Length: 288
View (tube, one colour):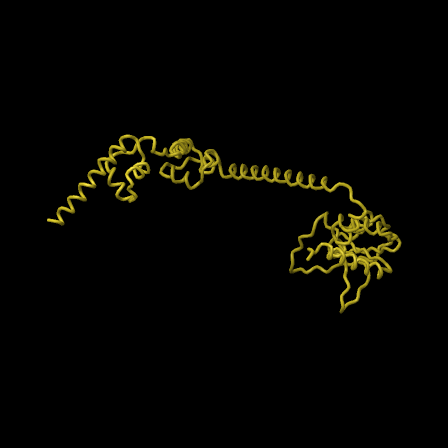
């Protein structure tokens, strides 16, 4: 009998709690509010207490995607593609597929050639927009530099030489200043740097290095004009042999090879360049 009494007591407690929970539920309380009111912290028991009683309207969360789903189906029935629907509604392509996959595929409205033409036109517009953005970024950055002071040009030139100029090695002593580059801008800055250092143009020797199947004469004329030197004063052009097994990408009218700029009697200049670079490295290193 004791066991039966205990069971009946538990049942009575449950029914009492259920009656209270239903009253609170019908009064518009949420499950969390009922939990706090009755101090029932078992989620399973709480669900049993309000079983069969619908939640109040204010606790129901509307499905925000119901409207999107209906609109997606409407657009699909009008012949829109997945990509077009995705762009229109701002949702994922996987969601579009889930919502409309039971609908028939729309009939193509243009031929494959027309689709290809439209795609190419779209790509051309995209690339033109990217080019404009790229050029605007470059223009803004260039304008931010402003006028270089002599010290700024000096430091730039030291770094430029140490990156691209010839260097002395313990196993190969080359204490002479020699700079080689294919970028006209780099050559201009290097020559301006030499002018800043007071290096006379008479001490400079120029030579072109270019592939044998390129326009060597045109390259010589180009570099002579850029350096402000007479082409007849250039040393003999070095022609690089072409490996038929490789495909050259440096072709076309813009390819002019490299210009070699050598400073005569420049051992002392080279030593100073190396010292300047060491000074820059030391100044840039974080303090202990």
